[in-house]
Image (cartoon, rainbow, N blue to C red):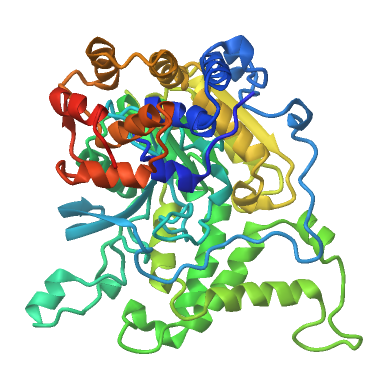
Length: 572
């Protein structure tokens, strides 16, 4: 079983960068003040992480074919028991960001980016990250957003508000930040910082000597494939050539499959939840109704409403229609039943379920929550989505479209999903197997929450995703093994108090995984902290960082000679 991990705040203080420092700090920070036996016990437990038989909750990797390749406590491995509903109100999804980039988010700009309907002369992509990217840059997980989500999937120090996948990202969670560097990208076409219809059009603004003219109706149409290509342009910018995994749900699940199809050599694992390989007419009909609600609002003005009142009434009705597809009848029967809001029969509202639907629409149409044009443009891209490609006879073929997806794949469906019925996810799994993929896991839930299950069921969804990303093949054993080897060396050094130049030279080379003669600044800070703690010094990480920063630029790689000087410096 997994060991307890440090809180996120403590991790950030430790400045964990690589799997070595991550594991080392998780196991040693609690041993300050208790030497000897605590250190020996921790190194034994650390090394045990790499021993498959010691990890009792891991299903053997061969079970990928059986559809059960995930971490879960034995008592929770059955998918037939739905999670409980939290009283009459029930659990709700948190999508309450104001339009614009979330605080602390990063921005990537790409010039002259081609999309299906034209060229974006200056495309901006907003993203957030959690965990630390290894120097090999082989531990990145790309998390794809749903239609109305921002890049804020999890809280950060700069933006402590809970994100839309808060319970799935962090130490020991589905996307384990002790192991992985998680990247969440706000979609092209959205209104949360990435370029979309509400963004300023640089061409219009320059020609009219006005710096504040949005695209509006002139924003070019784009495809889901264009969204994925924009995300991989960001990965190129970050120097990440290969992802450990591509993970997504709903639109994000479509993007995850699309990424695996377009860039198969750059993805180690793929996870697609409540998505499809080709949009079904039923889903198109639902989204068309939402678009009609917005476009029927007089304030929509063909998409050019940014200098006047927005079509909030249309957006309100669109959200009401969408809510019907996001949740399920069984949940509403459990939560609301036929509970009345009035004793007399009224025109307009008689039942709690009516009040709930209206509340969802009003909440979403509040000023500054989401741009109506983004709903129209992104939903149009979703409707056009298909992985079909021409086969050798020139015929469109779904098998041909997924043939390149040969990495381990986890496909999850929900029986109560109205928007993406579970037969569509079963179809994806069958297509992948028919195309020759031998490592396909299909997992079907009977959750009450319908399409929103991927946001709410952290036990079933989180357990399945965690097991898929960490279990072999293409799992996290190499990350854990490297970490344990480094931890073993460092712990032996601390225990024996052997800080000779030869020993520290070995430590340096262990940290220098790129063999370029440099080690990471944050790892040196963590190392000095541990060395000084073993000597009885009680300097804080902040003190050590500030002392080093006096003569070494913070964040810059450190060469061997500087490493030796810093390793024995007096931080008083």
